[in-house]
Amino acid sequence: MVARISYPDLEANPELKALTAKIISERGKLHNLYKMLLNSPPIAEGWLNLLTAVRQKSLLSGRVRELVIMRIAVINKAEYEFISHTPFALKEGISQEQINAIESWNTSTLFDSVDRSVLAYTDSMTRDVHVPKNIFEDVNKHFDARGMTELTATIASYNLVSRFLEALEIDPEPEPK
Image 1 (tube, rainbow, N blue to C red):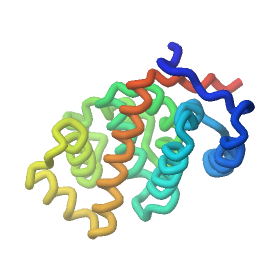
Image 2 (image 1 turned 180 degrees about the horizontal axis):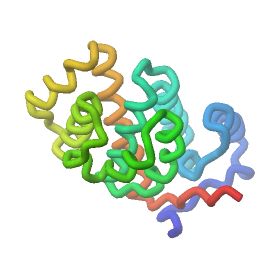
Image 3 (image 1 turned 60 degrees about the horizontal axis):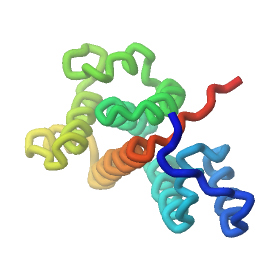
């Protein structure tokens, strides 16, 4: 696959050097997603700030965050996102069996009541946008106002990520050597 638009020439644009360094310091490397975002430095910077808040400053558990991200990747057929987050999901305690079952979580016995309420909320927000009262009430039993805000922002943010990745057909990251 080749991305639908070109990645910017990072060497030719000195404006990008500081932002590129910031992205690398926060993400460990310059992923293709961020390379593409650098076509618009203000968007790249805002994106970095939002996703840093979601991934690194939220009180939401890493397990819940990665469960949400993996489910969104499945729903939106965002292979880049799914592959990129599988190691994070495993690190946060989601088993390989659960990852394999995430596509059909609603018929699986591998997910507890919190997982199931989070996954139902994720499905509803991702597929329908409008969340039925019963789904909201079920997930809200497990989270306070901050938790619901962070959960909702995580779902919304990773829908943004997958839609951006897929619309521009951003190249998958190369396999580690």
